[in-house]
Length: 441
Image (cartoon, rainbow, N blue to C red; front, side, top):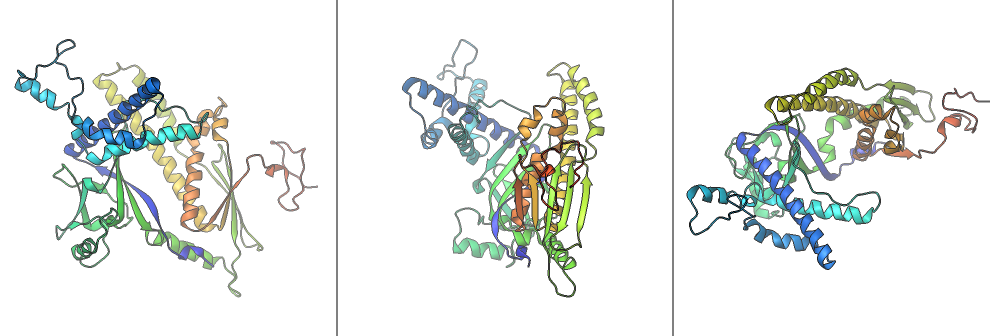
């Protein structure tokens, strides 16, 4: 009756707000700069090799050059004309020189992900020629992210001070498994019982937990990111059991099945939900319980709050345009604009999370339209309204949540003439226009 009761493991990204201290902030920004340098350095090297010899460097070729690159000094000059004499170098100049070995600063495992990112960019370019452009050099932005592996972090139990061996890495030995059971008093580890330390940091990272519980021993990667508003986030990539992670929602799902079942026979009729996306009403939802007249609902859901913030955003951006670029006042106003943008993103994300979870839990089959959003945005009159709705984000949520809870998601073809077909007798009327109300003959 309910397929969601069967549990399965899959990789899940759990994103949380965090508050790093100044030492960790320095490491994050230093690592982001290292990754940007590695990406641009090898992109330039690939371009030169191809122009000179018509040869291409593979990911393994670039990776083999990394050790020598870390120990090299990059074009350090005392001024624009005079090179440093290493035999008579002063203490001050030596400190400056030492800074040029910057690739040894930051998190060591993150550089490999910069190379993989460059390799993926070239693979996408060659596989999707005409759709994906040639890889471009990265610029220094006010938002960035880094990815690190278990070599750069450790989990320490709050009460016993014992370190948790990371079972998400390649260290799945009997000794490590036994140690992690002893450290956690023989129970399955919980993120609420451990503190997270990063290499090179003395204090643990402060993380704002939101009620989701997961096993820190299953984490294989950690992503640290920051946005233009100066907010920091941590994303755990964990191999988790969906049934354990979503227990409350699965219980709601089971209650929904029992509530809509026939009280006499116990027979359950599946619910099909069709969703039409729009601007005036963001979601137009029609739910029908097949072979039963018990449930036939129509809902209109509107994404509220953005218009009010748009007026404020316009005023903030006008003030920003009057400031001198690079000044202290310019930076303060830039942060105000970024925080307002982030607030609008949070409003939209929260709305779509609530609606997508409710729709998936209350439906057996969900039907949505396959929209050509890039083409629709070319309409100058509605481009801003369409972009602010974030339909693509909502559709992606429906896809992975349908997979989590074992539901069926169907994408209707964008050219399917659903508005010209009667929903009861299936008669097709080609003369019906967009503004007409369908009247079946």
